[in-house]
Length: 200
Image 1 (cartoon, one colour):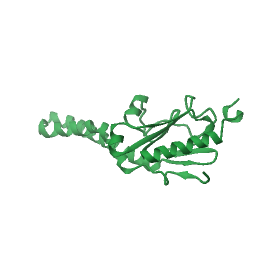
Image 2: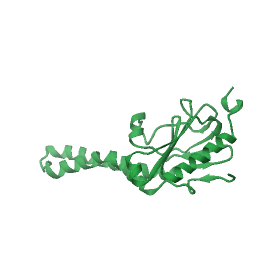
Image 3: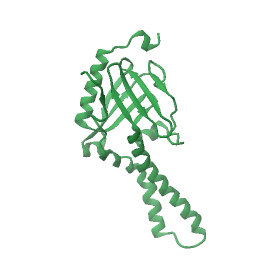
Image 4: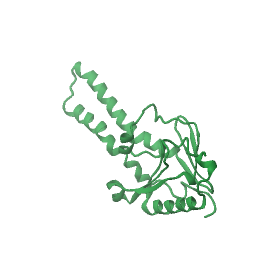
C-alpha cells in the first residue's frame, strides 16, 4: 500500500448533496406554502413576508450552498504516517492525525444511504478534540459560517470533514467506504502509537 490515497481515488458522490437538503426542506417549503395560500398584499403582511423570505434563504443556504462548499473545500489524504485533512471555507484548517491515535473506525448507513448505495466512514479518537493526543492542528476553530451547532444538530445535518474528535467522510459508495476502512485499519497496524504520539 505505497503511495498517497486521496479523495480523487475514493470521491464523495454527487448524489450525497441531496442528503443535506432533506432537513432544510421545512425552511423552504412551509414559508413558500404560506406565501402562496395565506399572505396577502396588506401592509401588515410585508414584515411577515420578509421574515418568510429570510427563512427560505436560510433553508437554501443550509441545505444547498453550505454542504456544496464544504464538500468542495474538504480534502483528505491517506499517507504513510498520517491521515491528513484539509477543510475550510472562510478559515483554512489542516490536521495530521497519526494512525496510532485512532480509536474507532466505523461505517454508517441511514435510509438515504441505503437507497442510493452510499455510506459514511467515521473516524474517532478518545480525546475531546483532535488538538491533543498526538494530532497537529492549524488553526483550531470549530465555527461553521458564524453558526455554532450542537452535536445533535451536526448529526442531523451530516457534516463533511472534521469537528471535535470525529472525522466524517460521507457520500462514499459502500464499496469505497469498506476499502478505505480496510486501508486505514492496515495503516493503524503498521503505525502503532508510541510515546511521542501519546504525549507521555
